[in-house]
Image (cartoon, rainbow, N blue to C red; front, side, top):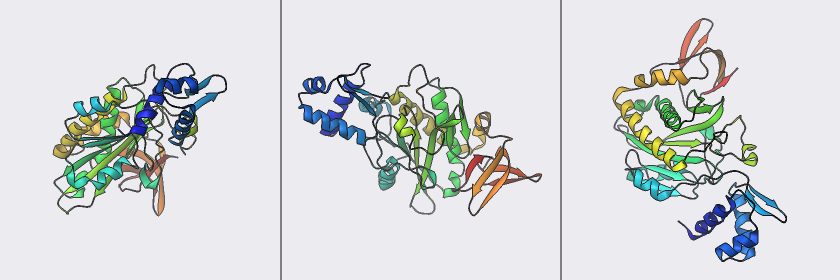
Length: 319
């Protein structure tokens, strides 16, 4: 870990107490000058961390931070595990190193300076508040083998969340996880350039854990996080559980296709029999959502006829 993040983590630990702490006390605890503490706190704000500052009282975090235990993570995961306090994008890192990776290798970061969502959207990535990760996978076949993979990934992450007693989850085609009908997590699968008979993928996912008000204001759709739970989950345990569930489910998908996951998807599908708009360039399609087929395509009923649609730029919105 870089030295400046050692210092910042020490400051964040002190700020995580239930009571305000003065800048002078932080300086005394860490053997730093008061000016150095001010500089660190200003820098933390640049990483999306909301810090209350009250004259005469001191500082306090506005929202809980959930930081990963790097040693616990590396010891629990059999695959290679890359961990960063900050990075431009976990997907970008894994794509740059895809030739060196094996299926199941994973990258985790506390902060992304250039996190990405689908269709080129920014993924808001404040330090330590959420979970940002990317896992590598190699199929020894052409890209058609991966059709429907995003649905399997969404199911796997939902299973891992439910395994930690997080209820009220739902799925939105093709790759979003909702909590109480608002977006909790998203998935971005990108393909590395390789030969035609091999498919190498980076499976990126982000889960909102503890959203601050200022960071939430940057998001252009209704969102949810896990702060309403009686107790926030252990972030390291959650990453470990997701990585293991993903490996298990993708191996099953490789052998059996999407069929074994249909029942789970259908039980969590939020849009069945609802009027929808399907946004697909250059035209939009309006109709009634009828679920998915075994290729992972979305089924839309329009004028008494059900058609299947699939593609990287399709988005679904309730009409």
